Image (tube, rainbow, N blue to C red; front, side, top):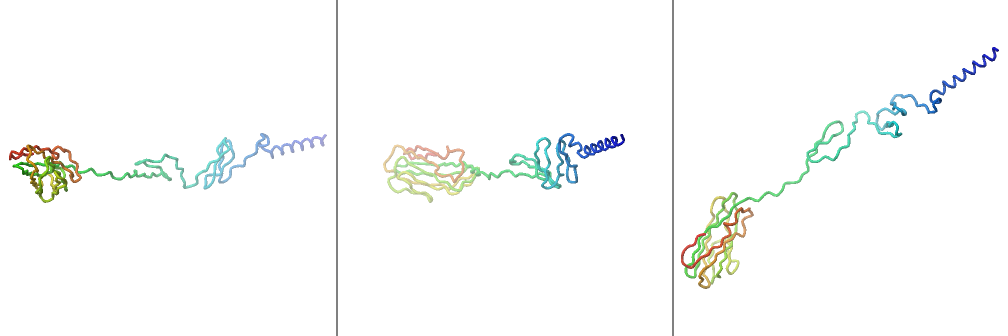
Length: 238
């Protein structure tokens, strides 16, 4: 009887030792996870992951994947859209960096404005026609140089007497330079004398600016003129 009792107690003790050695993992059928040690962190529902450090990863619960974990002194920089002109972008370490606007370059400067005008007198005495023409810059900008063209409806019989700065460009056409014009002032007077080929009951004189020095003229009505001159010896103003 004593032998049987001792054998039964020994059997129970062995079974208890086996169950204690297998632990909960053998009872549930799952492998045991090692206890977290230094440099590791437990992840709920998964195995232990190393603590944050350079080149280390952490498991994502329920996915079986891992992601890198930043180490000491590093910061996660979130993704952001490419900044446009005048915006700021987050930089590593929590600061911000200004993004300069894109350089488009300066546009062309607007041309200066100047109202160029011509005033004068014309007279026909017999077969001779004389013209006096005065350019004027009404401003606001100055005109560095300008050219004016004069054309007669009747051709000259011979040479044309011209002021300095004038040149004959056709049988009935002359182009003259005005020189520099100051805003709000008149320029030098231009004088022409033409002997007409045949006596005419009337002559049409055309005056037109062909070059205004690169300025913008807001009023072209006073530098494009058509003047009808009769052979009466009277002076016609325009």
